[in-house]
Figure (cartoon, rainbow, N blue to C red):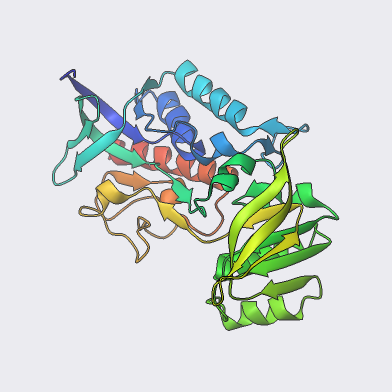
Amino acid sequence: MTSTTKETKVLIIGAGPAGYTAAIYAARANLKPIQALGIQPGGQLMITTDVENYPGFAETIQGPWLMDQMRAQAEHVGTETVEDMITKVDFSARPFKCWGDSGTLYIAETVIIATGAQAKWLEIPSEEKYRGYGVSACATCDGFFFRDKTVAIVGGGNTAVEEAIFLTNFAKHVTLIHRRDSLRAEKIAQDRLFKNSKISVTWNAAVEEILGTDAPPSVTGLRLRDTKTNALSEMPADGLFIAIGHTPMSEIFKDQLKTDSEGYLLAKSNSTATDIPGVFAAGDVQEKVFRQAVTAAGQGCMAALEAERFLNH
């Protein structure tokens, strides 16, 4: 293991749309940023195959390709990218100290956190097999591909209900699957769900297995387990959306930065500034409403501009 020290005006932690955009803007401001790419450079877009809603591309593009382009652009304008994962931070005094898994100590005048969030999955083998081939954790990203098809969505909170309603814009029919006999979602959202003729609810059920074809991979149905009787049943479906929540990648910051009850970093209104001056948070690690690549990129831009202003003042 190496033991070196790197100093920078801006350290960017994470490498999704927010991190790469922050790197591009910081580099163009001649701040010579260092970007620690983390364990999965590109974030959730690395498991998103077809992207049709990122501005500037008339044809469908691939998520991993888009992330490769963002990284190349960040490096082209002067970002130093490092294949390292930050495992420990000290924000008690400036300059801030961050330690990488490589053994490198990064000393930074400002830090932009863009570590993102991870969708919670069912953690069943068939889910992995069909992820990107009929199984998705983002209805707003992938709903379009299920026009006039039959889909199911798993969950019982606001996200599940809102995405079920959203999917009716495309799908012929949507079945909401919930492991209990009542939803956690807000009453007004539930009312809209129950009034929608294109949605049915399967209560007290858990997805035991996703059924489908191998070549090409395609979802054809679900095997469900009754959570009260353990009886198994099958239902046809062309796709499955998972909406059981997200986990923000904020664990190493929790003791030093303010978070909400779910672990999302808190930023000031109309800003990416956290409660520690000089530390900024952009993208899905602090924004849990929209969860889009374009909104994360916008916040990355904001964070870089705010870091530049902070350094100038």
